[in-house]
Amino acid sequence: MKLHRIKGIILRYLFDLRHSWDRLSEVFYWPVIDLVMWGLTISYFKQFSPDPTLFVIAIISGIIFWIFAWRAEYELSISLLSEMWDKNLINLFVSPLKFSEWVSALLILSLVKGLMSTIVAMIVAFVLFQTHIFTFGFLMIPFMILLIMSGWALGFTIAGIILRYGTKVQTLAWTTAWAFAPFSAIYYPVDILPGWAQFIARCLPTSYIFEGAREVLFQGVLDPMKLVISLLLNLVYLTLALIFLWKSFKKVLQRGLVNVY
Image (cartoon, rainbow, N blue to C red):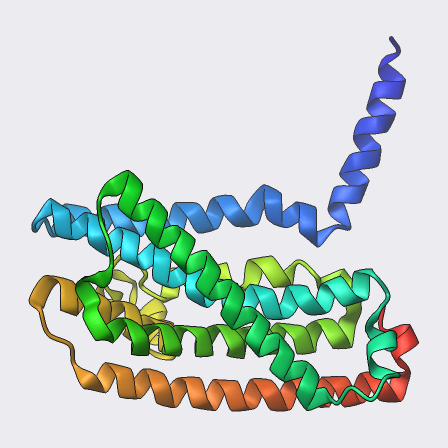
């Protein structure tokens, strides 16, 4: 066993790490996100201690609702990436396929897979923890519609960036949504965040949904303005995201689809 050969292999992977956003995100990004989110959640628990059952439902419902938004974003961006990994994007668009048809297919795909993931999560939550999120009643429908709209807006934005810059920014597909998670107030109220973070949270449509969900659980009421504000923000962001994706696609066409990889 030679130390210089061991050193050579270590250096080889360290050099690779320095140039790989994917591996760097695994080393630094996820630990920071987990620490921030759960640290804030624990801080919230120390301040407020209602019925423990409601806390369990609040946490589990937050997880399930977030799955719906995250899957909507992830499926859009990962579907594009899979075509790029397989070098199949050019094959799609030499066919009569229209851009609008491609986008529609991605929306349906993300919706179906999001529902599948959510249903499985609901079953697991009921079997393992004897909790369900039907406490929200018919409010589940607007909550989920607004969350999937948020996921679509973010997913289209990431897809547009990936189209412009290729697979070298592919790590955005599985990291970007979680960067917004601490500001979305999934497990804790917006008020527990520092002032600058509260400003960001108020600009996100997701924060109004999770705040509204906790109001339903802890107070039995929901401020309809939260739904209205979330809807308006979603419409603005979704429109801008689609415009950005279309412009990115047109730019790629000018460069040539064969160069997108």
